[in-house]
Image 1 (cartoon, rainbow, N blue to C red):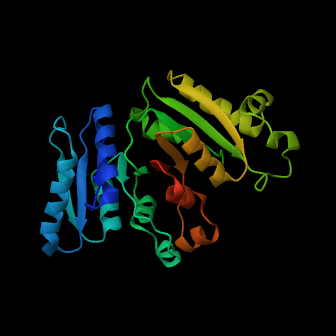
Image 2 (cartoon, one colour):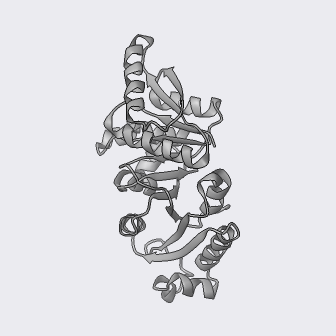
Length: 273
């Protein structure tokens, strides 16, 4: 698996470097480290950034390829991901709560929009990468879980445990959804083969065929609140979500759920298109 670690040498990028090396070692590959400078005259800044990243690595990390690109960070990261046919981009994220900055888009948001592959937004350093929370709404076909297993199968090992989470929100429930379903457990929905239960059954079968320990789960409430609460209380190593790519003003007006999860989650978030 080809992994691209994007870094600017600041503190929020350190977690991305650690996670990228961790993933590369577990999948038997070697990551590429990318830093972007605005002008060729900033070469010294790029060299300092790469030196800093290498200082974070343990002695057992082998030789890593490095890339320096000149231009706008988000655009150059996306171009490198496409030109190098990478399977995964890993980067940190600066906190962005300013409304204007959100409308313009942070670097991480713009990379998510433009990159041709999944993107992980790293947060704090994680000790392992075994417990995944896959937040599958069932809104698209193929399902998020199916896209995950196709695009990043190398992340799934015999030691992986995957919780498939579906949030039943009364605010978004359609007129045909019965009241009991808004209080039902995953087991009850799966036994009744409701649309949500059908999705959970399908996702569970996909993983069990690969001998991956799977836990279907349903929570009831506001989608973002329930996902963030489950991620923290379950102490997952990675949260997996889907995102709808579109115009920035549309995301702003729709109060994009993915943006909120990426912003407020206290652990790495993997974003799939």
